[in-house]
Length: 155
Image (cartoon, rainbow, N blue to C red; front, top):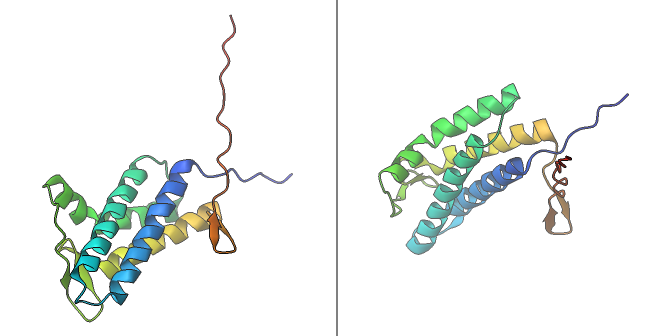
């Protein structure tokens, strides 16, 4: 008898969306011209806000897989400085170039490191739960959320 694979909870999809957005923002940071400082600031704020949202998603899920747990811990460590900046009221981007194609997000976290950790966590989630979305044409399609359980009380 084959075991039916359960669909991941909605928080996994939300986490995957934030991780994918981090990857996109960090990739775009490598392609934007240093002369376009407004674009750099926008991309940096996007990467930082998605990293903080991903941290919140990780607080809401139960991780029962060692590989996912390991990658989640590494992601939390890599983004710890961003969480501390948020607690201190950080509001302005301070991206600094530290190499030809590398930026320090918030002046503390290398964009490449954030992208590596987000990608590794996304890979671990997909290894555990299977593909989290499919692509039809150019549009990603997220599987529908299963119907919520209803509890019926009888007297």
